[in-house]
Length: 192
Image (cartoon, rainbow, N blue to C red; front, top):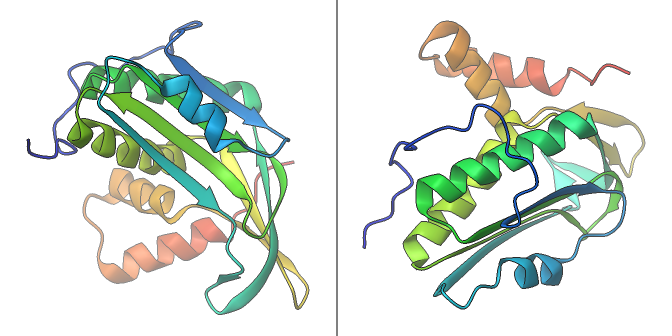
C-alpha cells in the first residue's frame, strides 16, 4: 500500500468535536508517558500503532541548551489538538489518536510531545503520525523558550509556522524570504 500523506482530507472539522472517546489530547505540567499514549490507542482491530516522541536535545544551532520551557493558551491549544486528531482520524481512518504536550520546564532528554495513533494498516498510521506532529508545530498555540548553558534564553517560533505564514501571505517564497521569515518568527516571543 502506498503512503497516503499527500491525500487531501475528505472533510476538515471546522469546530473541534466534544469529548470523543477515540481522542486523547492534553497539555500537562507533568512528565509525559509514552506508555499512557500506547495504552490509549491500542485497539484489537488495528495492525499498526505509530508513535512520535519529541525530546529536549542539548544543542541548537551550535548553542548548548540547558532546558526548554513551554507556554500555551491552554483552552485554544487543547481545542486545536482535538481538531487535528479528528481530522487525522477521518483522513486516515484511524481507530484512536493521542497527542500529549508538556508545558513548563522540560529538561534535556525528557519528552516534550508524544503522538500515538492506531490504524488497521501501517502506511496510514505512519502518515497520520507524521502529519499530526507537523500540523501541531505549525498551528497549535504553544510557545517554546530555549535556555542556554552559557546564559541567556530565546523564545523560539517553529520554522514550520514561519514557512506556512510566509506562504499564506506571499505565495511561494524565495530562500532569502523564507530565511528572513524564519528569523523574524524565531525572535517573536509570546505576548504575556
